Amino acid sequence: MRAGPLLLPGVRHAADLVLTSDEATLRTQMELSEIPAPAFDEGARGLRMQALLAAAGLPEPGVDDVGNVVAVRPGSEGGPPLVVSAHLDTVFPPGTDVSVHREGDTLRGPGISDDARGLATLLSVARAMNGAGIVTRAPVLFVATVGEEGIGDLRGVKHLFAPGGAGHGAAGFLSLDGAGLDGVVIEGLGSRRYRVEVAGPGGHSWADWGMPNPIHALVELGRGLTKIELGLDPVSTLTIGRIGGGTSVNAIPQHAWVEIDTRSAAGHRLDMLEVDIRAQVEAARRAWDGLDVAITVIGDRPCGATSRDAPLVRAAFDATRAVGGHPKPALSSTDANVPMALGIPALTIGCGGEAGLAHTTDEWYRNTGGANGVLRALYTVVLTAGVTDAE
Image 1 (spheres, rainbow, N blue to C red):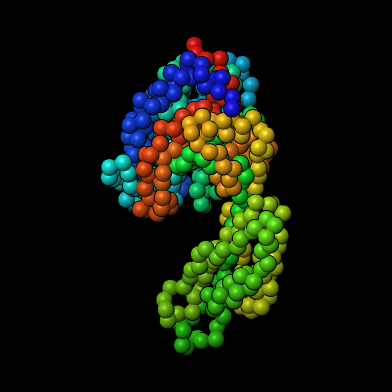
Image 2 (cartoon, rainbow, N blue to C red):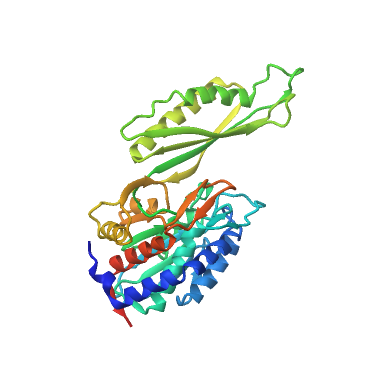
Protein backbone atom coordinates (compact mmCIF):
# COMPACT_ATOMS: atom_id res chain seq x y z
CA MET A 1 0.00 0.00 0.00
CA ARG A 2 1.26 3.48 -0.89
CA ALA A 3 1.09 5.03 2.55
CA GLY A 4 3.79 7.65 1.89
CA PRO A 5 1.61 10.48 0.52
CA LEU A 6 -0.96 9.89 3.25
CA LEU A 7 1.67 10.61 5.90
CA LEU A 8 2.51 14.07 4.59
CA PRO A 9 1.67 16.78 7.13
CA GLY A 10 -0.86 18.47 4.86
CA VAL A 11 -2.75 15.26 4.19
CA ARG A 12 -2.71 14.36 7.89
CA HIS A 13 -4.07 17.84 8.66
CA ALA A 14 -6.85 17.34 6.10
CA ALA A 15 -7.67 13.95 7.66
CA ASP A 16 -7.95 15.58 11.09
CA LEU A 17 -10.34 18.15 9.63
CA VAL A 18 -12.52 15.36 8.22
CA LEU A 19 -12.68 13.65 11.61
CA THR A 20 -13.44 16.78 13.60
CA SER A 21 -16.11 17.90 11.12
CA ASP A 22 -18.01 14.59 11.13
CA GLU A 23 -21.06 16.06 12.84
CA ALA A 24 -21.05 19.06 10.47
CA THR A 25 -20.94 16.66 7.53
CA LEU A 26 -24.02 14.90 8.90
CA ARG A 27 -25.86 18.21 9.27
CA THR A 28 -25.02 19.08 5.67
CA GLN A 29 -26.23 15.65 4.57
CA MET A 30 -29.56 16.22 6.31
CA GLU A 31 -29.93 19.74 4.93
CA LEU A 32 -29.33 18.67 1.34
CA SER A 33 -31.59 15.64 1.66
CA GLU A 34 -34.47 17.91 2.68
CA ILE A 35 -34.20 19.96 -0.54
CA PRO A 36 -36.39 18.18 -3.12
CA ALA A 37 -34.48 17.10 -6.22
CA PRO A 38 -36.66 14.93 -8.47
CA ALA A 39 -35.38 14.08 -11.92
CA PHE A 40 -35.31 17.16 -14.20
CA ASP A 41 -35.99 19.45 -11.23
CA GLU A 42 -32.71 19.49 -9.31
CA GLY A 43 -32.28 23.27 -9.50
CA ALA A 44 -32.92 24.21 -5.88
CA ARG A 45 -30.53 21.58 -4.53
CA GLY A 46 -28.00 22.56 -7.19
CA LEU A 47 -28.07 26.21 -6.13
CA ARG A 48 -27.45 25.19 -2.53
CA MET A 49 -24.55 22.99 -3.58
CA GLN A 50 -23.10 25.86 -5.57
CA ALA A 51 -23.18 28.07 -2.47
CA LEU A 52 -21.70 25.34 -0.27
CA LEU A 53 -18.87 24.64 -2.72
CA ALA A 54 -18.02 28.34 -2.69
CA ALA A 55 -18.12 28.34 1.12
CA ALA A 56 -15.77 25.34 1.04
CA GLY A 57 -13.20 27.53 -0.70
CA LEU A 58 -13.58 26.47 -4.31
CA PRO A 59 -13.21 29.39 -6.73
CA GLU A 60 -16.29 30.47 -8.68
CA PRO A 61 -18.48 27.35 -8.78
CA GLY A 62 -20.82 27.48 -11.75
CA VAL A 63 -23.77 25.69 -13.31
CA ASP A 64 -23.51 24.24 -16.81
CA ASP A 65 -26.17 24.05 -19.52
CA VAL A 66 -27.94 20.98 -18.08
CA GLY A 67 -27.70 21.93 -14.40
CA ASN A 68 -24.49 20.25 -13.23
CA VAL A 69 -22.70 22.27 -10.54
CA VAL A 70 -18.98 22.45 -11.36
CA ALA A 71 -15.98 23.90 -9.55
CA VAL A 72 -12.30 23.54 -10.49
CA ARG A 73 -9.55 23.33 -7.91
CA PRO A 74 -6.32 24.12 -9.78
CA GLY A 75 -3.31 21.82 -9.70
CA SER A 76 0.34 22.82 -9.58
CA GLU A 77 1.14 21.10 -12.89
CA GLY A 78 -2.09 21.66 -14.79
CA GLY A 79 -3.18 19.10 -17.33
CA PRO A 80 -6.43 17.13 -17.49
CA PRO A 81 -8.37 17.05 -14.22
CA LEU A 82 -9.49 14.28 -11.93
CA VAL A 83 -13.27 14.60 -11.70
CA VAL A 84 -14.84 13.97 -8.27
CA SER A 85 -18.60 13.74 -8.41
CA ALA A 86 -21.84 13.03 -6.55
CA HIS A 87 -25.35 13.23 -7.96
CA LEU A 88 -28.02 15.77 -7.07
CA ASP A 89 -31.16 13.93 -8.14
CA THR A 90 -33.37 11.43 -6.35
CA VAL A 91 -35.96 8.91 -7.56
CA PHE A 92 -38.79 10.61 -5.66
CA PRO A 93 -41.46 12.57 -7.55
CA PRO A 94 -42.48 16.15 -6.78
CA GLY A 95 -44.56 16.42 -3.63
CA THR A 96 -42.75 13.65 -1.74
CA ASP A 97 -42.16 14.47 1.91
CA VAL A 98 -38.36 14.53 2.12
CA SER A 99 -38.12 15.44 5.80
CA VAL A 100 -35.26 13.78 7.66
CA HIS A 101 -35.77 12.43 11.17
CA ARG A 102 -32.93 11.62 13.52
CA GLU A 103 -33.24 8.62 15.80
CA GLY A 104 -30.02 8.29 17.79
CA ASP A 105 -27.30 7.57 15.29
CA THR A 106 -29.78 6.80 12.49
CA LEU A 107 -31.11 9.31 9.95
CA ARG A 108 -34.34 8.49 8.13
CA GLY A 109 -35.63 10.19 5.01
CA PRO A 110 -35.96 9.55 1.28
CA GLY A 111 -32.60 10.13 -0.39
CA ILE A 112 -30.66 10.49 2.87
CA SER A 113 -28.03 8.05 1.63
CA ASP A 114 -28.57 8.08 -2.15
CA ASP A 115 -27.10 10.55 -2.69
CA ALA A 116 -27.18 13.16 0.05
CA ARG A 117 -24.31 11.19 1.62
CA GLY A 118 -22.24 11.52 -1.53
CA LEU A 119 -22.91 15.26 -1.80
CA ALA A 120 -21.97 15.86 1.85
CA THR A 121 -18.78 13.81 1.36
CA LEU A 122 -17.88 15.82 -1.75
CA LEU A 123 -18.15 19.02 0.28
CA SER A 124 -16.22 17.59 3.22
CA VAL A 125 -13.33 16.55 0.96
CA ALA A 126 -13.21 20.01 -0.62
CA ARG A 127 -13.28 21.76 2.77
CA ALA A 128 -10.55 19.53 4.18
CA MET A 129 -8.25 19.97 1.19
CA ASN A 130 -8.65 23.73 1.28
CA GLY A 131 -8.47 23.93 5.06
CA ALA A 132 -5.16 22.04 5.05
CA GLY A 133 -3.82 23.93 2.05
CA ILE A 134 -3.19 20.76 0.06
CA VAL A 135 -1.70 21.33 -3.38
CA THR A 136 -2.39 18.59 -5.89
CA ARG A 137 -0.36 18.18 -9.04
CA ALA A 138 -3.39 17.62 -11.26
CA PRO A 139 -6.47 19.85 -11.11
CA VAL A 140 -9.50 18.42 -9.34
CA LEU A 141 -12.92 19.13 -10.81
CA PHE A 142 -15.68 18.90 -8.20
CA VAL A 143 -19.10 18.20 -9.76
CA ALA A 144 -22.64 17.67 -8.52
CA THR A 145 -24.44 16.03 -11.42
CA VAL A 146 -28.06 15.98 -12.50
CA GLY A 147 -29.95 13.05 -13.97
CA GLU A 148 -28.15 10.04 -12.51
CA GLU A 149 -31.30 8.22 -11.47
CA GLY A 150 -33.85 6.36 -13.61
CA ILE A 151 -35.37 8.54 -16.31
CA GLY A 152 -32.53 11.02 -15.91
CA ASP A 153 -30.54 8.54 -18.04
CA LEU A 154 -27.16 9.90 -16.83
CA ARG A 155 -27.84 13.13 -18.70
CA GLY A 156 -25.63 15.18 -16.41
CA VAL A 157 -22.51 13.06 -16.74
CA LYS A 158 -23.15 12.54 -20.47
CA HIS A 159 -23.07 16.31 -20.90
CA LEU A 160 -20.05 16.61 -18.63
CA PHE A 161 -17.94 14.33 -20.86
CA ALA A 162 -19.30 15.46 -24.22
CA PRO A 163 -17.13 17.77 -26.37
CA GLY A 164 -17.26 21.17 -24.71
CA GLY A 165 -18.23 19.72 -21.35
CA ALA A 166 -16.16 20.57 -18.29
CA GLY A 167 -15.00 16.96 -17.92
CA HIS A 168 -14.17 16.29 -21.57
CA GLY A 169 -10.69 14.75 -21.74
CA ALA A 170 -10.46 14.22 -17.97
CA ALA A 171 -7.71 12.01 -16.55
CA GLY A 172 -10.11 10.08 -14.33
CA PHE A 173 -13.52 10.07 -12.66
CA LEU A 174 -14.40 9.26 -9.05
CA SER A 175 -18.10 9.00 -8.20
CA LEU A 176 -19.23 9.24 -4.56
CA ASP A 177 -22.53 7.44 -4.20
CA GLY A 178 -24.31 6.30 -1.05
CA ALA A 179 -22.89 4.44 1.93
CA GLY A 180 -20.41 1.61 2.50
CA LEU A 181 -16.68 1.23 2.93
CA ASP A 182 -15.59 -1.82 0.93
CA GLY A 183 -17.19 -1.82 -2.52
CA VAL A 184 -15.32 -0.30 -5.46
CA VAL A 185 -17.44 -0.26 -8.63
CA ILE A 186 -15.06 -0.83 -11.53
CA GLU A 187 -17.52 -2.37 -13.98
CA GLY A 188 -20.51 -0.50 -15.35
CA LEU A 189 -23.77 -2.38 -15.79
CA GLY A 190 -25.35 -1.14 -19.00
CA SER A 191 -29.06 -0.75 -19.56
CA ARG A 192 -31.38 0.07 -22.44
CA ARG A 193 -35.00 0.98 -21.82
CA TYR A 194 -37.99 1.10 -24.13
CA ARG A 195 -41.54 2.38 -24.19
CA VAL A 196 -44.02 0.64 -26.48
CA GLU A 197 -47.24 2.54 -27.14
CA VAL A 198 -50.35 1.13 -28.77
CA ALA A 199 -53.33 3.21 -29.95
CA GLY A 200 -56.73 2.21 -31.33
CA PRO A 201 -60.29 3.44 -31.79
CA GLY A 202 -61.48 2.40 -28.31
CA GLY A 203 -65.10 1.94 -27.41
CA HIS A 204 -67.65 0.60 -24.93
CA SER A 205 -66.74 -2.68 -23.27
CA TRP A 206 -70.12 -4.22 -24.23
CA ALA A 207 -71.48 -2.37 -27.21
CA ASP A 208 -68.13 -2.26 -29.01
CA TRP A 209 -66.74 -5.57 -27.85
CA GLY A 210 -64.54 -7.05 -30.53
CA MET A 211 -62.81 -3.78 -31.38
CA PRO A 212 -58.99 -4.11 -31.12
CA ASN A 213 -57.86 -3.56 -27.55
CA PRO A 214 -54.43 -1.95 -26.93
CA ILE A 215 -54.08 -3.49 -23.47
CA HIS A 216 -54.96 -6.96 -24.74
CA ALA A 217 -52.29 -6.45 -27.39
CA LEU A 218 -49.68 -5.47 -24.83
CA VAL A 219 -50.51 -8.49 -22.68
CA GLU A 220 -49.82 -10.69 -25.71
CA LEU A 221 -46.59 -8.78 -26.37
CA GLY A 222 -45.55 -9.31 -22.76
CA ARG A 223 -45.87 -13.05 -23.13
CA GLY A 224 -43.54 -12.94 -26.12
CA LEU A 225 -41.04 -10.68 -24.37
CA THR A 226 -40.76 -12.96 -21.36
CA LYS A 227 -39.82 -15.87 -23.66
CA ILE A 228 -36.78 -14.08 -25.12
CA GLU A 229 -33.57 -15.98 -24.36
CA LEU A 230 -31.47 -13.74 -22.16
CA GLY A 231 -28.11 -15.49 -21.97
CA LEU A 232 -25.82 -16.15 -19.03
CA ASP A 233 -22.43 -15.00 -20.34
CA PRO A 234 -22.67 -12.39 -19.05
CA VAL A 235 -25.98 -12.49 -17.20
CA SER A 236 -28.56 -10.27 -18.90
CA THR A 237 -32.05 -9.32 -17.78
CA LEU A 238 -35.31 -8.11 -19.29
CA THR A 239 -37.94 -6.61 -17.01
CA ILE A 240 -41.39 -5.29 -17.84
CA GLY A 241 -41.35 -2.49 -15.31
CA ARG A 242 -44.52 -0.51 -15.95
CA ILE A 243 -47.74 -0.89 -17.93
CA GLY A 244 -50.73 1.38 -18.18
CA GLY A 245 -53.57 2.77 -20.25
CA GLY A 246 -57.31 3.08 -20.50
CA THR A 247 -59.77 5.40 -18.81
CA SER A 248 -62.36 3.11 -17.22
CA VAL A 249 -62.93 -0.52 -16.33
CA ASN A 250 -65.90 -0.61 -18.71
CA ALA A 251 -64.17 0.93 -21.72
CA ILE A 252 -61.95 -0.48 -24.45
CA PRO A 253 -58.82 1.69 -24.18
CA GLN A 254 -57.77 4.06 -26.93
CA HIS A 255 -54.19 4.06 -25.72
CA ALA A 256 -51.89 1.82 -23.68
CA TRP A 257 -48.18 1.60 -23.02
CA VAL A 258 -45.53 -0.60 -21.50
CA GLU A 259 -41.97 0.17 -20.37
CA ILE A 260 -39.19 -2.40 -20.61
CA ASP A 261 -35.78 -2.44 -18.94
CA THR A 262 -32.86 -4.52 -20.24
CA ARG A 263 -29.50 -4.84 -18.49
CA SER A 264 -26.16 -6.43 -19.16
CA ALA A 265 -22.47 -5.86 -18.57
CA ALA A 266 -21.87 -6.43 -22.31
CA GLY A 267 -22.99 -3.96 -24.94
CA HIS A 268 -23.41 -6.63 -27.60
CA ARG A 269 -25.93 -8.43 -25.37
CA LEU A 270 -27.99 -5.23 -25.13
CA ASP A 271 -27.82 -4.95 -28.92
CA MET A 272 -29.04 -8.53 -29.31
CA LEU A 273 -31.89 -7.96 -26.87
CA GLU A 274 -32.92 -4.85 -28.78
CA VAL A 275 -33.11 -6.87 -32.00
CA ASP A 276 -35.28 -9.45 -30.25
CA ILE A 277 -37.57 -6.85 -28.67
CA ARG A 278 -38.05 -4.98 -31.93
CA ALA A 279 -38.81 -8.27 -33.70
CA GLN A 280 -41.50 -9.05 -31.13
CA VAL A 281 -43.00 -5.58 -31.53
CA GLU A 282 -42.91 -5.82 -35.32
CA ALA A 283 -44.62 -9.23 -35.25
CA ALA A 284 -47.26 -7.79 -32.97
CA ARG A 285 -47.72 -4.81 -35.27
CA ARG A 286 -48.49 -7.11 -38.17
CA ALA A 287 -50.89 -9.19 -36.06
CA TRP A 288 -52.79 -6.31 -34.51
CA ASP A 289 -55.01 -5.09 -37.30
CA GLY A 290 -56.51 -1.72 -36.48
CA LEU A 291 -53.88 -0.69 -33.91
CA ASP A 292 -50.98 1.73 -34.23
CA VAL A 293 -47.75 0.67 -32.53
CA ALA A 294 -44.63 2.70 -31.74
CA ILE A 295 -41.46 1.80 -29.85
CA THR A 296 -39.09 4.41 -28.40
CA VAL A 297 -35.77 4.09 -26.59
CA ILE A 298 -36.23 6.03 -23.35
CA GLY A 299 -32.91 5.22 -21.70
CA ASP A 300 -29.45 4.10 -22.77
CA ARG A 301 -26.70 3.60 -20.21
CA PRO A 302 -23.48 2.35 -21.78
CA CYS A 303 -21.43 -0.54 -20.44
CA GLY A 304 -17.80 -0.17 -19.47
CA ALA A 305 -15.04 -1.24 -17.15
CA THR A 306 -11.87 0.10 -15.58
CA SER A 307 -8.84 -2.18 -15.27
CA ARG A 308 -7.78 -3.20 -11.79
CA ASP A 309 -4.30 -2.09 -12.82
CA ALA A 310 -5.40 1.50 -13.45
CA PRO A 311 -3.75 3.98 -11.04
CA LEU A 312 -7.18 5.25 -9.98
CA VAL A 313 -8.29 1.75 -8.97
CA ARG A 314 -5.04 1.07 -7.13
CA ALA A 315 -5.51 4.39 -5.32
CA ALA A 316 -9.07 3.49 -4.30
CA PHE A 317 -7.96 0.08 -3.07
CA ASP A 318 -5.08 1.59 -1.08
CA ALA A 319 -7.36 4.26 0.37
CA THR A 320 -9.89 1.62 1.38
CA ARG A 321 -7.25 -0.41 3.18
CA ALA A 322 -5.86 2.72 4.84
CA VAL A 323 -9.17 3.30 6.63
CA GLY A 324 -9.63 -0.34 7.63
CA GLY A 325 -11.83 -1.46 4.76
CA HIS A 326 -11.49 -4.46 2.48
CA PRO A 327 -11.73 -3.43 -1.19
CA LYS A 328 -14.19 -5.50 -3.20
CA PRO A 329 -14.51 -4.95 -6.96
CA ALA A 330 -18.17 -4.51 -7.89
CA LEU A 331 -20.55 -4.22 -10.82
CA SER A 332 -23.24 -1.53 -10.80
CA SER A 333 -24.93 1.18 -12.83
CA THR A 334 -23.69 4.64 -11.81
CA ASP A 335 -22.45 7.90 -13.28
CA ALA A 336 -19.11 6.14 -13.83
CA ASN A 337 -20.65 4.15 -16.72
CA VAL A 338 -20.21 7.06 -19.12
CA PRO A 339 -16.49 7.78 -18.64
CA MET A 340 -15.82 4.02 -18.54
CA ALA A 341 -17.46 3.67 -21.95
CA LEU A 342 -15.25 6.50 -23.23
CA GLY A 343 -12.09 4.76 -22.02
CA ILE A 344 -11.53 7.16 -19.11
CA PRO A 345 -10.52 5.45 -15.84
CA ALA A 346 -13.58 5.68 -13.63
CA LEU A 347 -15.06 4.09 -10.53
CA THR A 348 -17.65 4.61 -7.83
CA ILE A 349 -17.25 4.24 -4.07
CA GLY A 350 -19.55 4.49 -1.09
CA CYS A 351 -18.97 7.13 1.55
CA GLY A 352 -18.91 5.17 4.78
CA GLY A 353 -21.63 4.34 7.24
CA GLU A 354 -24.50 1.92 6.72
CA ALA A 355 -27.72 2.39 4.77
CA GLY A 356 -30.82 0.54 3.68
CA LEU A 357 -34.18 0.75 1.90
CA ALA A 358 -32.75 2.95 -0.85
CA HIS A 359 -35.27 4.29 -3.37
CA THR A 360 -38.06 4.07 -0.78
CA THR A 361 -39.50 6.71 1.51
CA ASP A 362 -38.21 4.65 4.46
CA GLU A 363 -34.56 5.01 3.41
CA TRP A 364 -32.13 5.23 6.32
CA TYR A 365 -28.48 6.02 7.00
CA ARG A 366 -26.44 5.13 10.10
CA ASN A 367 -23.13 6.90 10.62
CA THR A 368 -21.15 3.89 11.83
CA GLY A 369 -17.64 4.58 10.57
CA GLY A 370 -18.98 7.37 8.42
CA ALA A 371 -15.92 9.56 8.75
CA ASN A 372 -13.79 6.71 7.41
CA GLY A 373 -15.82 6.85 4.21
CA VAL A 374 -14.98 10.53 3.80
CA LEU A 375 -11.33 9.75 4.50
CA ARG A 376 -11.43 7.04 1.84
CA ALA A 377 -12.65 9.60 -0.70
CA LEU A 378 -10.01 12.14 0.38
CA TYR A 379 -7.20 9.59 0.19
CA THR A 380 -8.33 8.36 -3.24
CA VAL A 381 -8.22 11.93 -4.52
CA VAL A 382 -4.75 12.76 -3.20
CA LEU A 383 -3.27 9.42 -4.27
CA THR A 384 -4.64 9.88 -7.78
CA ALA A 385 -4.15 13.61 -8.35
CA GLY A 386 -0.74 13.63 -6.66
CA VAL A 387 0.12 15.93 -3.81
CA THR A 388 2.97 18.28 -3.04
CA ASP A 389 1.66 18.51 0.54
CA ALA A 390 0.58 22.02 1.51
CA GLU A 391 0.90 25.62 0.51
